[in-house]
Image 1 (cartoon, helix red, strand yellow):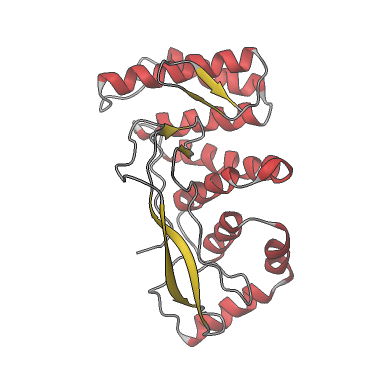
Image 2 (cartoon, one colour):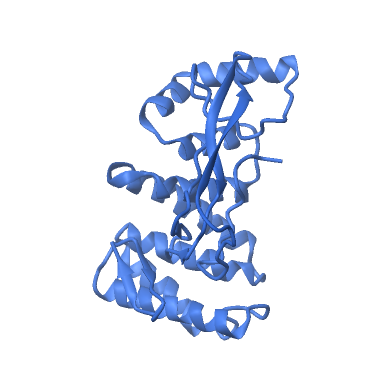
Length: 243
């Protein structure tokens, strides 16, 4: 099982049940050089909800820390995987490449993990999730570049999910990333299309959750009218909280 926690993109509809945020020190072996190392990973956390980009808020690490080989920066997201000699040779060449060394020097762990996943043929859905997590740790300088790549990945995911209720969550994320990037006309079109869609938010969504999703759409349209690129969510009273 991958160490990377699957990102449940329910946009704040399903808080985690863990009582508090804890971290664990765990031992790993770097597949690149065979060296053992210890890394701190998330043990548990409590989510009070999510921002519109699906990042948790509350006493929780979102995204959680990843185990990183100290000598070369490789992300060990599959600690139980065993590589054969051909795979190891390919892996070592990838990690030694100028592109990878540049990502180690300039980019965040989840962004680097997305590049690893793409190199080794992970699913496009998994890469889209990892790129989204990378935007949460990006900081102001990296955010536009990461969000551009995440937006492209999620737009493609919407196409793959056509006809599935899951596409509504992905479409909301596309609109969120467009707004955060200042593409207000595109974002407005995305959320107005959702508001006008007779099927939104989907047949399997419970009434309370459906009402909450509609509130998010209206909040997004207000933020767009205000030309806001803020990291935002709704509070317990349904009011916009932005940063």
